[in-house]
Amino acid sequence: MRGQQRYYAATLVLLLCAAGCHRADYSKRLIVILVPSQDNPYFKAEADTAAKRALELGYRVRIDAHDDDAYRQDNLIDGAVASNAAAIILDNAGSDSSISAVRRATRAGIPCFLIDREIAADGIAKAQIIADNNQGARVVAEEFAKAIGRAGGEYAELLGRESDTNAQVRTRGFHSVLDTRPEFKLVSAQAANWSQSEAFQKTETILQGHPKIVGIIAGNDTMALGAVAAIKSAGLKGITITGFDGSPDATGAIRAGELHATTLQPAVVISKLAVDEADRFLKTGSTGRPERQVIPCDLVTRANADEYQDFEKIR
Image 1 (cartoon, rainbow, N blue to C red):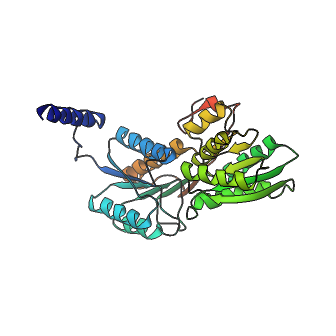
Image 2 (image 1 turned 90 degrees about the horizontal axis):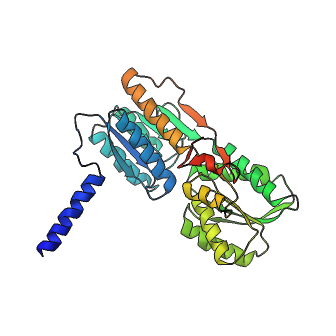
Image 3 (image 1 turned 30 degrees about the vertical axis):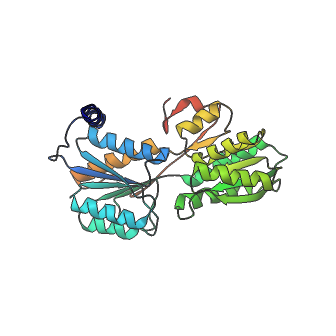
């Protein structure tokens, strides 16, 4: 029994050391970072980058996930207000459903800096810094069409969460390119909700119903990798798959020749900008930038995949 106690005590020490081996310094101002999920590599990169930058600038941080649930997001915003946070960095739970939460924080004197997803209102958040999802979708759709070739053929699309504005913008961007090309025919569009396991299952169904498809265009990398796994499981080759986000797993799959291309959504750049602008606002009363800031995306293929790492261009 004592051995077990020593084991658990040692484990606790290790966990505390992994977390930093020190208590939070409550004399420092708090920045609260709220993202949809810490399981998704893109959202985790946002949270980790923002936290690292805030710590470098002398703040303490708290990270929470709202799971795309507006009610949970409301509670987390209220928690930030109760904690007297200096600022909130937020990847929100919906462009319309998040307006009241951002307004409530702002009225409580806590400035909000939005990343990745915008809200359908101006003048409430201090900054809305987003990737150009339309531009990113168009460039990857062009690459998708180029890879398949002039013969075209039947293709399928894997869509993200319907409530997510970015999912809607990306699919419109894909179709602004592919719908103008009569040689391409969309035979199936399935929502996989940003999930790799759902994408795997949906791709299996698509392959059974449409055995002649030549490509799958996915609204994010996680779904694209689910499609890659399903196609490998079926023993098929020659199907072009593209993603969106620029995750480390996706760039690895591109190097391996399993995924054709993705679009890097610059999570690191956006998250650093948000924290820097929060810091500037807290010190001067102004970010020095317009509220809405759109950051272009990069196309990642096998030719340049080595230039990207952890959602960032490294050379």
